Length: 333
Image 1: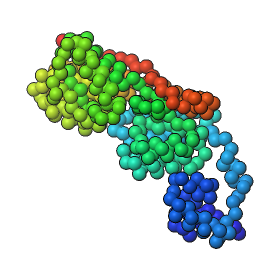
Image 2: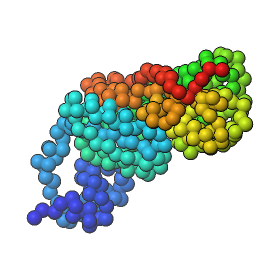
Image 3: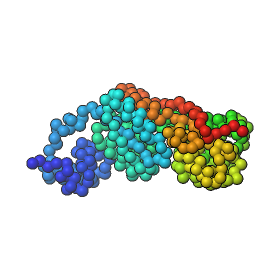
Image 4: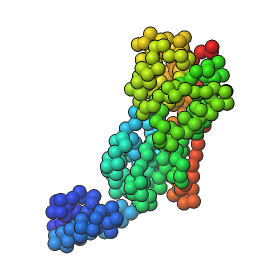
C-alpha cells in the first residue's frame, strides 16, 4: 500500500496539512528546513500523489468561511444569520471558525484552517489582523472581506459609518436638551474607536459644548467596561446623558447606575450603539443607534461573489446605513 500524507506527517512530526501544502509547493508558509524534511520523507516512504484527489480539490468550491473573533460584544450572531441566509439563497455552504481575541497565533491558526481547504471566500467578523496575518490572508489569493470593522487603508470592508454613529448618538442627547454627555467604553486606538470618538466630539463642538476629560471613559466594548465607567462617573456625577459604545457597555452602565441608586432615565439618560436584541430585553429598554448587522452579513456574501467576478472590486469599501430607535432609556430635560 502506498504511503499516505498522514504517514509522512507522523515521520516528520508535523501536521498532515503542513505535508499537503509542502507537497503542493505552497512552501511560503513554512521554513525551508521543514519543507526539505517533508520532501525527503515522502521520497523515502515512496509516496505517490493521488491525482484524482488533487483534481477533486481543485474543483470550484461552494463554501464560504466566516472567521469570528471573541469580541466582548454580542452582534456576531446577527452577522452570521445574514451570511447564512444569503449563502443558502445561492446554494453555498458556511463554515464558522473562531479566532480568539487579539492573539496573533490564534488568528493565524484560524486563517490556516480556512486557507488550507477549498473555500470560495473568507469573511472576517470584527477582526483586526496584524501585518503578518494580513499578508498571509492576501497571499492565499482567496477573496475576502472584513465585516463590522473599518480601515483607513485599501482593505475591503463592509461596516457602519462609525464617525456618523458616534455623532448621531451624541446629537440625539443634545437634541433632548442634554449638555453634559459622557462617552463610555471607548477604545481610542483602533480605527473604529477613533472614528466614534471623532463623531462624539463633532456633535459637542457643533453645539458649543466643551467636554471634560473625565467625561470619556475608555474600555473594550464589554459589559465590565460599562460597570467600570459608571463607577468612575459615580453616584454624584454631573452628567445627564451617556453614549455607550456597545449594547454590552450600555447594560453595564444601566446595572451599575441602579446599584448606585440612580434611575434611568429619570436621573441619567443612556444611548447605546449597536441596537441588538439585548436593547429590548433589558428594563428600561435601551434607546440605540442601531447597526444593520444582518445586512452586513448578506452584503458580505454578495461581495465575495463580486470579487470573484470582478477583481477590480477587491478593495471596495461599503457603509451600511444606521437608524435611531428611541425606547425607554432617555428623556428630555
